[in-house]
Structure formats: structure tokens, C-alpha cells
Length: 382
Ligand code: SAM
Image (cartoon, rainbow, N blue to C red; front, side, top):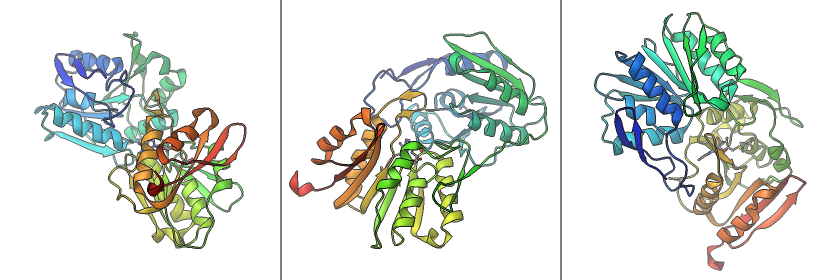
């Protein structure tokens, strides 16, 4: 992995998180970061308080954090928060003027300048711009950056709708800037999104950046056919819980289970929490909700079952390293005899992965698109 970053007039060593990813070609910054840095250095050299949204691995935070500049970085990703803190520390940058907020916290008022890395999800961008419209003083510049291919008419429209007059820059190294100025006045965005969960009385509430926000994921729907059903007390983890539909359905079929909902998105974990509270309030005390990178830091040999509908991308990159990490850490966290049960796209060949990792893997069900697999931790047999 390339780690030496020349950003403007400074050099940093920057790493992606988690640290042990296999894809060595990916780096922790991109040409959109470089463009933002060059633009701000030229046009806003006197900025004293900066708000940064969606800085994936802390490249912008590292560049801009110094004694004369207060930096607040807002992110929906727990991993991004970890990466920024790590990269600041590794580059010996004092964090005295640096702070981080999650995506659902109130934004700071009175900032000189806002920088945005345009997120993948338009709805999340709309949510963030709406939140900005509530706090920004009229005239505050908002500069966003993205790969040219990710700047659509709808992206520009969102800036015009929520912030104010907007123009775009020329493309440089396949990235483009979106330059806007707050016109003042709050513009609301319609989040969370609610929908009824088919076949149940549940209503599912989804914050703006949640996976499959507008309807039930087809993989999750198929997975529902293979969830556990028992009256026994069981400890279950819904790993990569998103809005929590898998854990919620498991709870409805295992009424005495303790369920831990885990995701690296703050909005996902909060949506899952909301969905248990709204739909199964009587069971709320049996549940816990944790922002985390997979199961790192969880107690070994401590749970009966891990349910998982794994992701296959991180930020803009398609990758299976997160699924691998989830399976490996699920194995560590399961008790002897405990089970990992997953849903996956057929073509991803998780069967082979799990067989190699657990020494066994059973096919519980399949259709044209998906397989549901079960692997049991049985260290005695390995
Ligand atoms: N369980 C939900 C469902 O079935 O609709 C969501 C499944 S979605 C395919 C995968 C989830 O994994 C996303 O919510 C994503 O935020 C989460 N995720 C991605 N990387 C993660 C990580 N390193 N640790 C924990 N969760 C992660």
C-alpha cells in the first residue's frame, strides 16, 4: 500500500483502516483530497475554524490540524474515526485543536469554512446539507470534492436546494470541486425513512446512511427463512446489523435471547436501537447496541451464535476483506460449539472460505442469487 502522501506543502504517512487489509493497491487519500487542500490553501488561507465531513481515513484532518486552526471532523463511520485518530498520532500531529463527531450529533455553529467529501449515498448528502443549513451563517463557504464520475446533476441540485448558489470547478486528476455558499435558513430533509416490515407488525425506521434504507434488502428477506427459533436463552450477535432487521426477527423467534447489534455506521446502530425500542420495547433490556469494527475487542468464546449479512465494499472500494474479518472475528467470539450463520451472494464462494476457516460448512438453503451457510466452532476437531 502507498503510504507516503504528499499533500500540498506537507508529507504524511497515511494508512487505511483496518490496518491489515490485503488489497495493497488502495491508499488512504485520493485526488479529491489533494484538490480540496490546494483550493483551500489558495482561497482560504486565513480560515480559523474548519468543519470537515466524511474524511475517510483522516487525510484532510491531518493536513489541516495545526495550532491556528480548529478542526471538527464529522463522520458516520466508526472506522474513519479510528483511522483519523491513528493517522494524527502516527504523524505526531497534536489533537488539541481537533475533535470528532458522529453523523447524528448536532453540528458546531460558527465555522469559517466547511469541506465535504461527497458520500456515496445521495440521501446521506441531503441529510448532511440539511443539518448544515440549520447552523451555517449566511455567506459561509461550503466546498465539496468527489471523483468526477460521482458528481451528478442530483448532487449539484442537493447543494442548490439546501445550501445556496453552487458552481463546479474544472476537473483535475479526475476529481471535481463543488463550490457553494450558505444562503441561510433551515431546509428540512425527510429522515429517518419508515416502512412496514412485510409479514410482521413491525415498522422499520432508517437513518439517512443506512444500508437498504428504503426497503428490505432481498438478501435479508431470504435470510429470514433460516433464522434460529428457540425459547432457550441464547446470546446472539447481529454482525453488520444495518437497521437491525435480522436481529429484530431473530429476537421475535428467540424471545429469551440476548441480542447484540453491531455495525461500524453510527446511523445503522442508532436505527437498530430505534427499531427494537419501537417494535419490541418489552425486549429492549435484552439488547445492546455497539459501534465497532467487526468484533474486534469482543470477549473470546463468549456467544452462542453470530448472524451476518456481510458487506462487500468499503467507502468506494469493492472488497471482501470485511467479510473475511467478520468471519474470523466471529469464530474468535463464538463459544465452543457456537455457530456462525450467514447469507451471501452465490458467486462470492463463502462456502469455501468458511470451510477453510472453521473446518466445516453446511448449506442451509439457497436460491438463484443467495446461499445461507452455517459453520460451527469446534476447535477440538481441527
Ligand atoms: N444486516 C443488515 C441487513 O441485512 O439489511 C445490513 C447488512 S449490510 C449488507 C452490511 C452491514 O455491515 C452494513 O450495515 C455496514 O455498515 C456494516 N459494516 C461494514 N463494515 C463493517 C465493519 N467493519 N464492522 C461492522 N459493520 C460493518
